[in-house]
Length: 66
Image 1 (tube, rainbow, N blue to C red):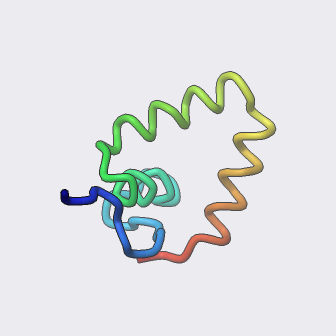
Image 2 (tube, rainbow, N blue to C red; image 1 turned 90 degrees about the horizontal axis):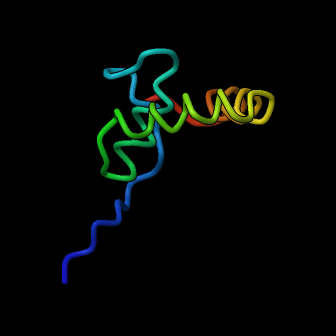
């Protein structure tokens, strides 16, 4: 059975970036469409702004560029 788990490390995808490329990198790592990750990010921003903004900016600083 073929696994859909990606073995490469998480990187910010600067080719498909809108702000920092974090959502595009997460989508590539999870093998899902970028639209779903960005929709989840908007929902996180609407329902938990301080938590989302803090985690997004920490991720943008810590996750390396591709």
